[in-house]
Length: 337
Image 1 (cartoon, rainbow, N blue to C red):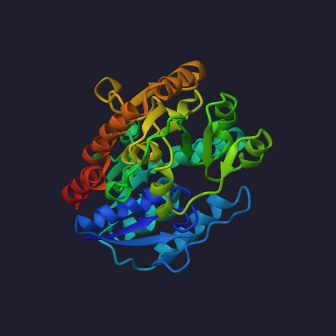
Image 2: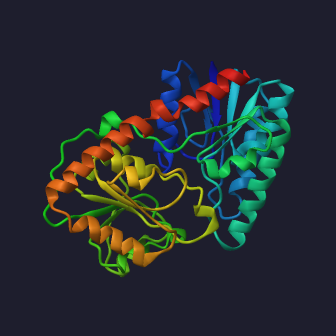
């Protein structure tokens, strides 16, 4: 099947590209041919998205509308919610089935967040009337699909890339890889004095650096497994805000695949920690519980942390490999086309 994927993300620069590329490769292994419509030069369809504040969505919608006005060589289209307004009319005209793809609901605050939530609601209103199905990243978001057939596709990982031998340290090191955005309130994590390495980019980098945090530049996708092998505990602590409750952080799957113990906010479709002793789930925004969970792993003998890491790898292999998590989307496509 020829699939066109429309995204507003730059597939060479954006922090979230690893999730999209991982899912796309898994779909290719299911036998699909993937084309891209993206603000990434050199791909199948280039569309513009202005970097000027307040003009990103408008310019992207207009560019997608223009690109879709020409004949598209596709059997089906995966349309990220940001592209729905620009794409749906021409897809209907060309009688091409499409599926709304929502892997990044709005998390911004203030007027920007208000505008994004309106655009998000509008995209889902359109999809419930015109789409052939929906793809969400956790069961928390299934209700948005209404009566549409829906596939839940959590963040996955190329497990084979993370099978690097690692040695657990007597003095454990915590690591956070991901967005260093103000919405994540990572300065609170730094203030906990947990010996954390922060890796990534975002609008909170300078504040973290001024506070004395160990902040390192964003990594190439290929370098992430090797860097994770130098740490012991992967962390993800999110604020107590409604929009985080349905999160499905890619890094949790990567931490587990790398053989780390994991302390994370209790979001999305996380496994039961009772059957996964390498994992601790903490209520959103609960700083005291987060510190306690991290310290619990730190106090373990290194050989026990290594044994827990082996269990984490096995969970990632069985539950979060992209070949596994992509099956529901493949089934949705095959059933609806």
